[in-house]
Image (cartoon, rainbow over all chains, first blue to last red):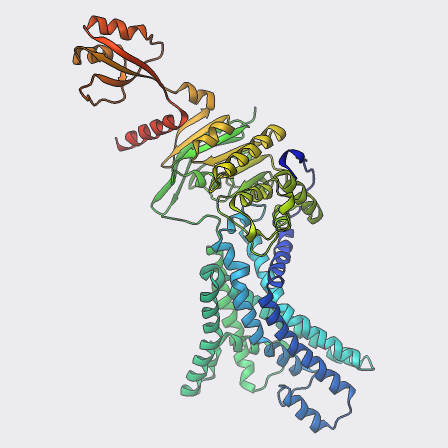
Amino acid sequence: MQIDQARYHPWEGKLQSPWVACGAIVRVALMQVFRNKAYWFVLGLGALRFLAFWSIIYAVTQLTLPADVQKMFLREFGFSANGDAGGDNGFIEFILGQSVIVMILLAFSGSLLVGSDFRLKTLPFYLSRRIDKRHYIVGKLLAVSAVVSILTVVPALLLFLEYGLFTTSTDYWVDNWRIAVSVLTFGAVICVVNSILLVTISAYLQRIVPITITWASLFLLLGRLGDYLFRETQNNFWRLLDPWRDMRLVGQLCFGKFRREIDEELAWWAAGILVAICAVSLVALVHRVRAVDVVE
Amino acid sequence: MMHLVDIQHVSRSFGSVKALRDVNLSLLPGTIGLVGNNGAGKSTLLKVLLGLLTPDSGGGTILGCDIRHGSPQLRGRVGYMPEAAAIVPMLKGVEFVTFAGDLYGMPHRDARRRAHEVLNYVGLGELRYRRLEEYSTGNLQRLKLAAALVHDPQLLLLDEPTNGLDPAGRIAMLQLLEDLIAETGKSVFLCTHLLGDVEQLCQQIVVLDRGTVVRAGTMDEMRSQVSNRWELSWSGPNPPFRAALERVGVQFVDTQDDGQHRIMVVVPTGFRTTTFFELARAQGAVLTEIKADEENLERLFFRVTEQAAQAAML
């Protein structure tokens, strides 16, 4: 259409609260992720694990197996010795098992969802609209949380639903409703911690390679370092250096199930460490998000 | 009439760099050109007006909203077109403009419908389903204009809208802006270092230099400040004729005497050209050439910024 064929039409409507724009930020972020074919590959890997668990739950609930065979069967598929497919440990196993895929996905999506706003100077585009940095930060945190949830909380809840639907009585729902709450609580912890860390790292490093290296260092290197220091000193607290282990301990806290006695004490320390990391990251993020790049 | 922009004593520093120094502006609605060299403080002033930056001191209003405290309300009435590419990767044109509408707080359906309208208006109707990465510089500028127009703002703040465009693209963009201003009557704040753009579009002009407003007023006022310059050539005695010219208030633009009895002068208001001949005759000189030298906006800009620089050095 030629310019002179189009007429300018005024718009008379009421503008909504700026908080509504957070939803638009999430929608656009998911659009960006799902349009990238590489992410579909990673999402596919995540879906494979989900399908495996789905099949296990189906087999456990539909096939009549002796208890020891069932346990061996579960162990073979990655559940802990105490694990059972529809119980607390099964869901912890599932969510934590998704960690590698979540980490890969987040390492790559940080640059796309947040880094590009700084690299392509898109931040003034956001902040010159009717939102301020609070709305921008909340929108981006929700966007990353949505990406994390797709691989963790949502499939875990689906598995919970599946197990319940395969049982004939309503006892499962009455006895295990806390599992759904625990999944949601643990999911919230994972989402909050990962999103704050990723958005902050991406806001500073912007490009995919430095973000991936830092992200990997944070979750692999610190884990190895923590293990090494634990082996040298036999002090369990060194293992809290690993943020992912901290999240796992907090997860056990949410489910109220601990593998070892000391884990309960460590879990509270882990929660404190995660709160401190998130607080420091948020301060750094708020400082970084500004509409004007200062060039001196 | 209510002022569009009314700010007093606005200053803003970044560390040791003073980007704005005691800026005072009272501008009426209309098309305003904000000109200055790179680093003059244009973009900083634009961001202060938009509420993206809080001034260190001073304050004022834009569209009646306080620039210190009224940012969200203000931005609902202002459309900002940034200088940088500022794209969201993986989005299509129509999605980008819809997203801009969403961020302004428009209901999503309205934002989407309006995105189609404004994309048609800026001439991107055919390209609206293309990915942003595939847009040319000229089309990206139009797209950013569409994103600024989506919520039908009262005022448009355009930061270098013709930056990076080839001559044809620049002409097309200026034509589009000219049509928009004529059709909608919107106020436009045009930030640029291209004086031709300002001359073509603007009714008012603000000249910034090193963070200071060195000239502000209407284009007509500015044009009236264009100096009355003449180039003179003569034969005969040199110093007496120059002294005679100085006595009647004539200023020498080029004070170097190249020995060829040729000089550029600025004459005071009300000066009659016959005075040149009278003075020459009185000093025994003969004027061989007298030529009017009209100062265009560009040269006026350089003159006022040079004067500001000299004043700052003093």
